[in-house]
Image 1 (cartoon, one colour):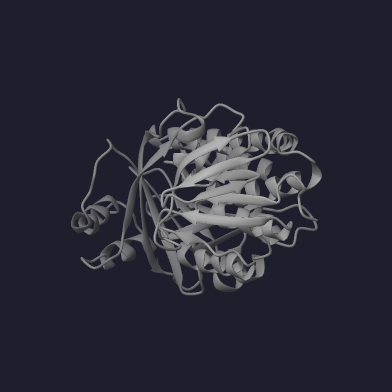
Image 2 (cartoon, rainbow, N blue to C red):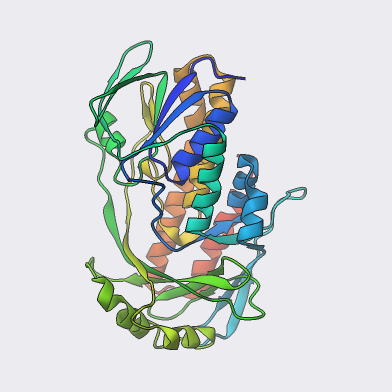
Length: 375
């Protein structure tokens, strides 16, 4: 059922949002061009925590079985004190009849391999090292000038080029820029100890520490730190991370002691912005972090990106014009995205003031309960 108003589509950005959009729009019958400024399917970061609603979206995308086979799926989040003492558990139930578990995790490179495989299998041949220099719209379509001086003509353009989106600047010249939230995150892979069967948070200390299993033998550990924005060189990361983990006991003490000069650590400041809606202009629409970047407190950024693709393809199939489809997409999905962004920022605020663990987990639990509602 080819969307009559979107027979030919350009997707800018080959991350999770862009690959998901390529899969859903090809499945709907559209002809898809996918470009990215990077030289290949570039993966940035270590692991991904996956909520139940995200697993549901991945199931609708058609990749849940692969994610479950190569990653981790389970239920619940265990909340611990700094010394490792068990405080409480946050349930992560999905509605009756759901075919997915309530929680999960996967290595980001593994998810990229799964999604890129589906993109190629759908007949999409990405063009890398390419960007958009100019977008010109008229009543019938969009003319795009690429960085290699070639032209393309499309029914619509999907901007999936991340938090620093050039597409966003091209259609909304006065859009806000990403701003530092006051927190930075550290990520690294650690062994999965025997008996660890779920996600963990360690609250009540100077930083928030957590881990998510990503396979039968590995987890990814994260540390969220309140700090002035700073640039750290790779060489200083191991010692600095070990120092942050000094107060923490249980398995974390063992992970800390195992950090060495060759430990691979990803470190980045957390940024966000609030872009007024709607997140489209004419025949160009923004998805994923290009429209609604979220900090990782609810582990829902990747899930929203996949949901964006699913909802966009569905609305394009239901409507006979791009304008009507984009409006229906915004009416159906924008509030959900804003809820995730706002809730994540609120959890980050509570972390920064070192609110009691129960106050932090209450926001997490309430937000996750709302996100299980159908799209």
